[in-house]
Length: 298
Image 1 (cartoon, rainbow, N blue to C red):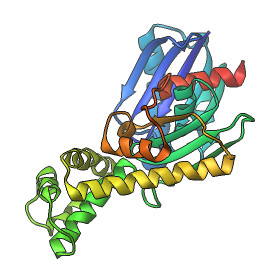
Image 2 (image 1 turned 135 degrees about the vertical axis):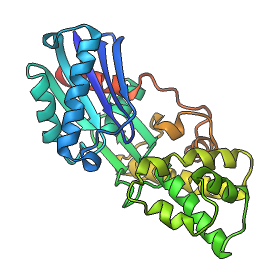
Image 3 (image 1 turned 90 degrees about the vertical axis):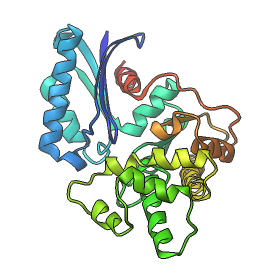
């Protein structure tokens, strides 16, 4: 049995081919989003179709051997029929299952459709599935509405902090000068032209999360305040889902680039949730997509 998993998060597209034992035969990765809300439907469809075709070709298999296709994508919750139709146009004979990107992350991390997940990458969300199969999520509203504790949010808060320091409303720390150096600008007024430049994108702002996390690790007070606020945002997302599903001490996993390594953000969130050890995911989200398709159709 051959399954294909597709992980279309906020900043990366991964397409993997897996055996029934979850052995990865081939993995295709692109450092770009396939979210139709960002790219537009036409461009997102073209990217998905070409990536699927390329992956199958590179793996040296024929499309007829693919039995299941699972896809989890940012923006898919609002456009499941569109995503299913795109996949069907390439693999018409396969059993296709689509879901939001956080659902495949949960299934992959736990190795089953059960448990809690807190995700912080380009965006942020908490998601849970209880023993009866009921699910709930909190967050996932996108960068314009919320995404507290995400990479984009941390980056934007860093820029906001710089404006307050420039105004004299906040005490200057090392993060201020580091922000200017990172953006390659020299004066506070240049922040306006940088942020409103037509070519500016969410990924560039999200990448600033690395800057504030590094500053926080050295004890920079402004950076620590931003990270503490981000951890509290993520904790509130978690609490919301736990309450709605009436969960009692559910198994918790983390996903997304900001929770995948030992940072102050992850340590604070673990402390708030009550975790003594960092969660260790069983499978990756792209493998979770393949597993989701298999579990849904077998």
